[in-house]
Image (cartoon, chains in turn green, red):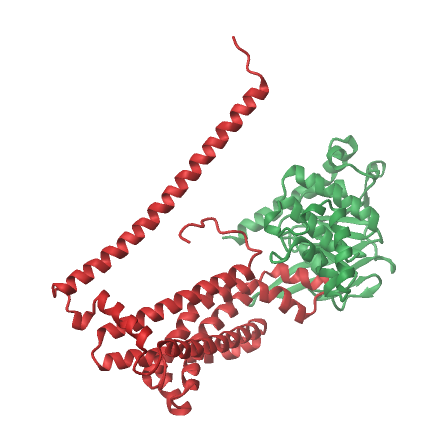
Length: 284
Length: 291
């Protein structure tokens, strides 16, 4: 009961409500590896993200964090259980979804503006309108002077800004992010986190943000899902009641932040150790 | 103690930078001149030794020709024409066969590479046949084409096509297979249809591979056309070589060879220009030397 008085409130598992933006209900995903073995990626996995909510998923390496995102896009289908997005079962890649990748997924042969306009153009928006929109989004992420540059001419942080603009231009109701800032240096990452929170509070999207960095998760999220070592399932869920708007550069010195991070870390630590010993065994 | 004002210091620093830059540029120019000079020196030395060897009969000019003899042969072809008609007509005929074969073979190779690269089942089914077809010595097909298509242009074009097709196909297929997974997933989620993924992700990312194969395969197309003419033709550089060979005219063989080499170099230059235009998004290569 002591947890109740803290900002990190441990939530109990419950069946997802019908109006949730994302509802993953008791999903198990198995697949057959190329050499014919059955692998369980995640098991008995339940997760709910309300509309406009920012959820982070943390867990040890190889516990199926990215798998949860691919279930929401429909690129992977659950073996048992079901996944609903905006109340509808996932059948195809939904137009409501935006995805920011860990790796650089920009098209290197397209200039910044052509990259950002790609989404609307793929979806059949007239050219002039798509480029107007793209120009607007490039300005919003602060790259107005770089419209004609190619990705290889930009820094890692600038490329991530382009990736954000490319995703947000489609005005996704659901935003999935797979360790998007893990390749950036500390200062750039902090700046990008602020940028993301700014864009998110304008757009009111529901976010699932996968990361292995617990502090990043606590700083950004309304709700943190801690996964067990693979095959992953939800170990515990925490509600993070830090006030918004949050400033990334300052929040990590906030005593309340430190307290929450410590509580969740205690929970996560044993899974990380378990995950590492599993990894060592697998490599033998 | 004399104080140096910051502006003076800055001015001094600026002039020293200008001087250093000028020196570096001068060094680069000097090195460039040296490289060109050495290249020319090697060419002159080789040709001179050859010519002297031929003059003193160390190298028999009857079998191995001589630079002056080759030059005279080229000059007489240019001014008086060859036994088969004007030289430019021979060049034109061979180039036309080469180009037609190159374009048809390359387009076919690219199309087949993309279709098989995108479709796992087709790739698994056809890969064995392509391996078999690729292992047939293709020059031998020249005889088949001459029998089937006659002495005209069609048989040479057909031989050039099969020479080009497999090289371009293999590269296009590999290029399609190597397209980045994350990039494809990104396009898919941004809303691209399978056709849009092919045109705006797969083809551009395979382009580097395809262009690399075009350099090699133009040479192959030229070989196809010339060998086809060798086997039987009424016009063309290949026929010129086989006529010279029949008359024991070593100068003629070498002269035709040099003309073919110049043709290949000119086209190679044009392909490089085209490549630079198409992939202008690529970062500049680290080392620009040697161009």
